[in-house]
Length: 59
Image 1: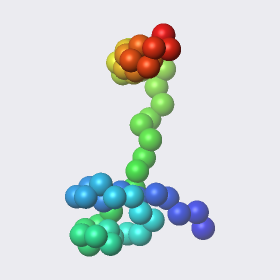
Image 2 (image 1 turned 90 degrees about the horizontal axis):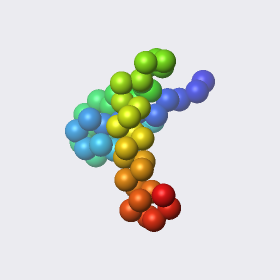
Image 3 (image 1 turned 120 degrees about the vertical axis):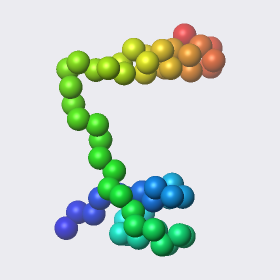
Image 4 (image 1 turned 30 degrees about the horizontal axis):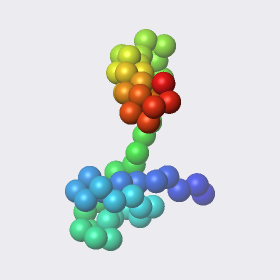
């Protein structure tokens, strides 16, 4: 059976376990955002990518 990666919301540690080994809080399954042709955040992502490329002098 395929295991899905999980994340502890308290200490932000990734794990395959149902409970965090550090704080013993239950972990949550990570899910990608739903696909949509109308992407609300596309312009923000492009701007951040341009900033990063300019910072590294690649754009």
